[in-house]
Length: 319
Length: 302
Image (tube, rainbow over all chains, first blue to last red):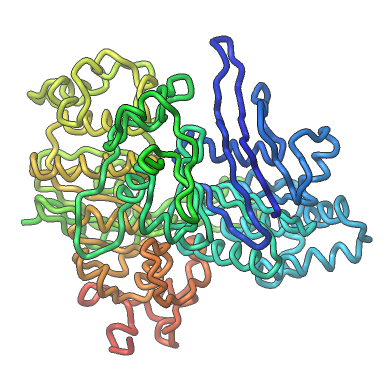
């Protein structure tokens, strides 16, 4: 198992008490697997990614649980050691490619720096490697673009450069946080194809964080659906999309417009996700849930295994 | 007579460098043609959607319609009484220092319409008590409802919506799209709906215009466009939409990017990415014939 997250809990202490932003989040990603993490704004998906790479903004802190990379715990590493893990063993791609690149350096220089920092290579060898990375992520004529600055690239090409940077040191895990959200659909399709190819050819485990179920359907083998800081459903993408178990997933799938000839009214989930300081007792989804019953108001459901899946919902508890 | 018609509307933006640089370096003025000869007609009561990628000129068309930009060439004719606009970002389009009451009442004050704030808020699913609150007390979806209430306060016949749900989460997007459909039925509104999201467009539109680099390349009823796309660019866009049905349908991989609008390719702007391009496509700009601007379609090659 490349990545295992077990019972992760993240808290933000504040003057008005402690806010629990992530509560008992567990999942794992295998070598070569793409796990999609989907949820609406504030569900905690980006926070999960930041916790794994050790970049939680203080006062946020990991208050419980374990994060294991290839069997070794990384959630308690001193900052210096964690810095070596980041970049070398975990690559990261963020939403906005322009803020991930330094505008003052050519992309060649940025790639070389990353390669020399993490791998034991000389300058000439680093350049060779940088060029082959650019070729791999689909930059046409990499020799000609090597000495260009980020602003000379289009959005899609910049995101390819960011991906090249993220995989420069051959990490075992790639965390991509909304990598296609800032891009047009035709470019999005190209970046999706690239991420899939990297997982397949390099055996990289990919954690793909996005709000777009369509992107996950195209790329991932498994998906984790997050709501109010918890994983409410996790399982193979085909099963979750075709027959969702958790009422939130059901609502989410129904609210996505689909291209079709027949037009139906979209399914509406009434209300909005609760804020962190107002999470109701019992199941966090209960105020919006059309299927709630007494137990949902009182007791918080843990993920319950249903075949290859798990859903945190009392509907699926053994009677 | 159509409610709204655009005749050969173009819009240029001056993107020249400062005067001194031009004089010293002998550079000419540079114009960016954001919208290039667009013809459109919108009938009362229908929803016309414009789709396209960034830089296609769809938002510029929206601004030309409501008069935020004057056209550089061509004419915009509106035979209705009033139009209103709904913007993408409900955080930027509401004054944070005003109470909701003042925000919604502003069009009534200026246009002397006979609506009530409470009634407008009820129409969009908010309560009249919300009038006393400030925008920051609302979520993104509720703010977009306030924008819609403000638009309705002006008693418009035409609503121009520029990416009205793009900043919202999908479940909230569904609420707003359903609300817009209900309002259209109840109040007989006409929508011009700008979006980059084809699935959203297929949910709301009666007719769809596909834009590429400032021109409409195909326009058709939503039914026809989504079942039988004709322009190669429309086909490519539809192929690029992630497949939620997991049907595993065969798809042509998407290639290339939108060219720089400052330096568009000669002939058909789509020719460098088009699998059907030939010599004519590389030299001659295709006109919109029978609702498609494509030589290959006109010649029956595809």
